[in-house]
Image (tube, rainbow, N blue to C red; front, side, top):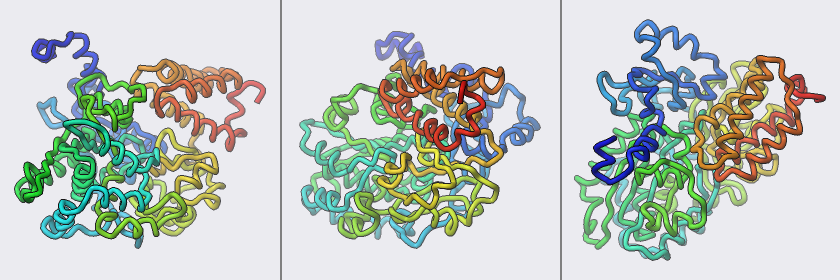
Amino acid sequence: MEELADQFVFGKANVFGSASFYDFLQPENQGKKVYICNGSACLTAGTQPALREELLKKYKPEEIGEMCCFGKCYEAKGYLEMEENSSSPPRRTGGQAGIRDEGLGISKVQILTNEFTTIKEYYKLWEKVLKTSKEELLNELKVSGLRGRGGAGFPIATKLEGCLHAKGDIKFIVCNADEGDPGAFSDRYLLEERIHSVLLGMMIAGFITGASWGVVYIRGEYPRSIEICKNAIEELKQQQLIGENILGSGFNYQFKVITAQGAYICGEETALLSSIEGQRPEVRVRPPYPVQKGLFNKPTVVNNVETLACIPFIIEKGGAAFAKLGKGRSTGTKLVSLDSHFNKPGLYEVEMGTPLSTLVNEMAGGFRVPVKAMHIGGPLGGLVPVSKINDLTIDFESFAANGFLLGHASVVCIPEDFPLIKYLSHLFKFTAHESCGKCFPCRIGSTRGYEMLEKAQNEGYKIDPVLFNDLLETLEIGSLCALGGGLPLPVKNALQYFNQELSTYFKNA
């Protein structure tokens, strides 16, 4: 770090502050040889204490750390082994290597889960794209109605059009593959099993906007995804499908793969950009938006893995074909991640608008244990009581209308015998640990919330409901990004639907 500070004329404290922000680089994690997942899906499954005992047969206690999450939610025994005698990112994951090996449930509607052919066959579309006008390609995306699959649901065509018209000698397409939501593993599936859909989607987006660089930012907790992505890019180079003057078109496009080092906040687009630039990954105030001033202050489009992977289908089949699928403004399909509490856990591709009851009861075979709620959409998503299953369809509007959030569409189940107060405490602790620290409502508020819930469980402390609601309001309206701003949603859902269970921890409740 001192060498970096000298070479780039940075203050040593700045370099240390940036590096030590990340889980893999924190001083307290030096010397760790294995990490146990402490994510929501593994927590509610109750598997990790036994896993720790098993790992203690191989490792010393000080060699075992904790981290969240490794995308193994469908088997709920997540752990990650580090390569011996190396400070590099992890090389081996606990359990089987590939998601496909887990026996996923895939629906009949296949856009993202359709079988890959060959590079030669698949990239015939790329040859066609290079001979098509940017406006025509952009129009197909407008017609498709494709919205961001990372949680926000923002139309991708709007971002691409903004970047197309932005002035800049260099532009970037950034793939946000920092899938940190506990319970989510759909991005990992695409990176490991359908990587060319992601890469081609980025290439088409680059051609539309005039971007010459595609940056894939992949979380260090997914070592196999990183390896597969790099190998796929090398294949494209060998086939001369990327590089300078691609296929004589005059268009140039290169890829850069960034191995992230463990920070949930880097899933927020502006923090991700700061991370790529080598800065401490703190959330930026907007405007300006990334399409105007993004990576290195150049016009940049940041999109989630699943969103980009939809683009090739839309360009090949037409925007209307994509728009025919779905419901209302929620067009196309959605990948849904189901944890180990289902009889048939795994990944499902469903048409937007599919009844939640169809997914839960028919496709996934129902719950294998009694469940009282499902946390859908990541730690900042809605806490859905099982009584609401028949009221919801899998689309943005249905979830919003019922006071929930579809988000990443990850599903973490809360069994009937799992104390909800313990789960809420876990959410506050997660937010406190992952906060970038830039705004005080998130940084301090999440910590105060965790402290109150812990005292209520362990010291007989009665929470003042007025104080608690004030805290939630401060988080919701005062936080710079969705980490602090989104945390109150599942907490409010819990207070609304499980008041009887939680009332014992509150004053006069």
